[in-house]
Length: 263
Image 1 (cartoon, rainbow, N blue to C red):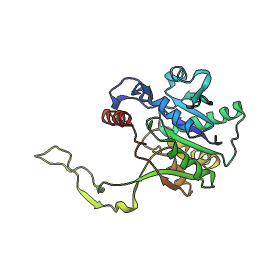
Image 2: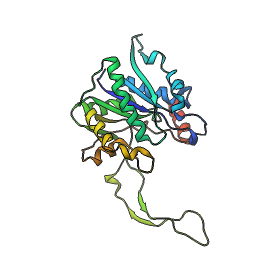
Image 3: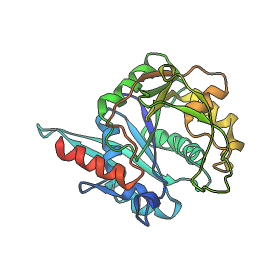
Image 4: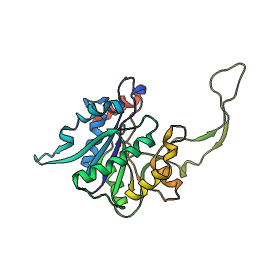
């Protein structure tokens, strides 16, 4: 097991998945996205996990981790147990939820006697990426452990990407017409996944410097690496994985279910 710790963001709603409850409690082949993503982190060797849940669902989320732990059992009958602390996230923005998770990491580390110093690898992962393979997580941990302070998993862009301008009004058509401004060179572009990994001090300082931005989604950062970039920090990439897709819509859920059926 590594010394890495993780914040698992799970405070989002399941509206686009067609459910009234939290997205993380949606089941994928009989197991919630929350459990699958937490298990993936534990299988990758993460030493402790903080889950940020909707404020009114903390107790419900905690029931998925009896005695505040997730336990893995190998084929040989050996088991390992990873501590999990469920805390309330923020309804203001994902950035605000992650900041609360970082506060809770200090509590988790102190309670269980874990190391949390400037260089400790800390991951930020989305519960919606429930099929992320442990090896993809280990690549991020290995890069941070090797001395890179900010590391993100990425995939090459395969679609043609174009920059567009504002919507164009038309007296005859109301179909969302927008003018193309430029075609982007996709060879220099990547799509970003999670978990994103950081040295503890790098991530903590990046969030502290941008705390006021977290108040609402309009100003908040869409990912943690962006906060590090804003401080002038260098962000490195490692290969991601196609299985680390984000389950956001019913189509995503159907695709993820199909992938599980075929595995």
